[in-house]
Image (spheres, rainbow, N blue to C red):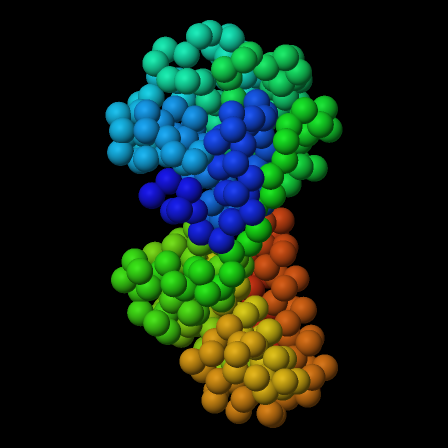
Amino acid sequence: MGFAGILGQERAVSLLKRAIGIDRLPHALLFTGPKGVGRFLTAITVAKALNCLDRVNGDCCDRCPACSKIAKKIHPDVHLVIPEGATVKIDQIRTLTREAPLTPYEGRGKVFILDQAETMTEQAQNALLKTLEEPPRATFLILIAPEASALLPPIVSRCSQIRFAPLPEGVIATRLREQGCEEGEATLLASLAGGSLGRAQELRKSPLSEVWDLVGQVFALPPGRTVPVLELTEQILRQKETVPLFLEALLAWCRDLMVSKVTGRQDLLVYRNREAALRGQSKDLALRQLLAMYRTVKQTLDGLGRYANPRLSLEVMFLMLRDLQAA
């Protein structure tokens, strides 16, 4: 499929194809943007296009031996550098700088893809500078990071930055349907994914029906009773890995309550297939209550990684949500 397989990044694809087609691709590229929007796939496609044996108009054929080897990550001239543990370490970059000046073994050029480049230690970034300053003729480096500010300024200044945008919900939903997802589920996953196809695919593997049931229980907590709050917290913590997803789903519901209250427009909802329930619940609550509920969930989600006691943070959130509904 080549560059045609990259969704929603027409500007980035156009720039890269044109540069490759006229042999003017910069030797150091920085791909920035959210996770799951095609940065890594694009880097692999660039490596294919540079080394493709049957390249046409700056795009790869995706069929020749070179393309096949790169797809299988066994091409001797295409190297993937990923974190060892939490970081990309200086020894990994030293290996890169030793390999970079060598003549390609069988391709047109050597390509080094630094995924999660923002995890490079400061020493590793400094070690990379000389190669970026004086890149060998047939060597290309592609750094992938969420944003340029995650790297040292001297690194950024030596790279040509290409920004990758969040994907439109329609693009994500269409791809999910192509992968066998039902219409309603595809729409919901696309709405929750924040513009990331990768995130939508992760969510698809999650127990969404169980999460939705838990969201419903939050708004059924009886006033003045603490035991149901403790029981709901215990139920959620039995599968700790789903806690962030639960909070994201709950936050989206609180957001939809406000949208339903203010606009009444179904097309603006995340949970479009639950418009009637949203309309009924939002009708009984003031906008100030809905805003306070949204902020309560958002603060809990933002602080999830910092809290030493997730049980306590969930219990406090549930008590606050229960009391806000009764206020």
